[in-house]
Image (cartoon, rainbow, N blue to C red; front, side, top):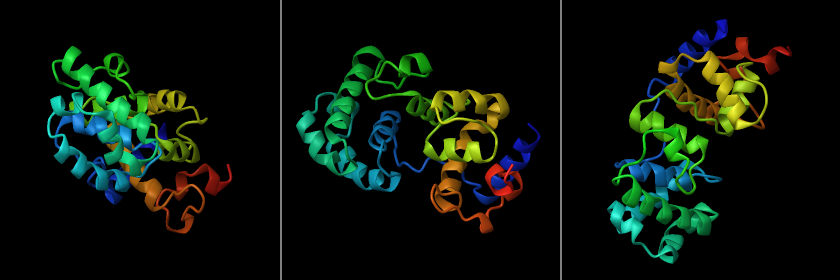
Length: 207
């Protein structure tokens, strides 16, 4: 698609540091942080994880944790009962089945409690440097507006984006799209007047 290179270039210039907004030091900590981020902001997760990771500083400590205690620590992230249970169970699986390492394949990642394609793609891209397309709400909304994809089903949008994005750019592209979606191309009141991607936007052009 002819517009893709231009869109990537503009986003690179605006957001040169294409990094995950979630803070972590260990691979399983990113898995946990992404699970907490469901229906919650990254900013809120980053407020919660320092105390959580201090209380449970190792994978084993998470695997052996009392779920109720984890619930207390992640309560403000919402859906805390499901998230706490998934965190503990996933860490047990990492210890018992994966030699204490986050798996490096989509197939194995999807076996972990609380891990869907969005989470798996983020882990594959950020931990292992594999080409990944993280289809969160920002990515889906903006990909549709730019005509890079059509529809709202995450897996279908992921497939469409994989077909047009250079593999080596896909992970960073998705991180930049998140930043762009928070900064400019918001869901309800996009700042179209300030948007550097206006020439490529289907909604702005009315096409």
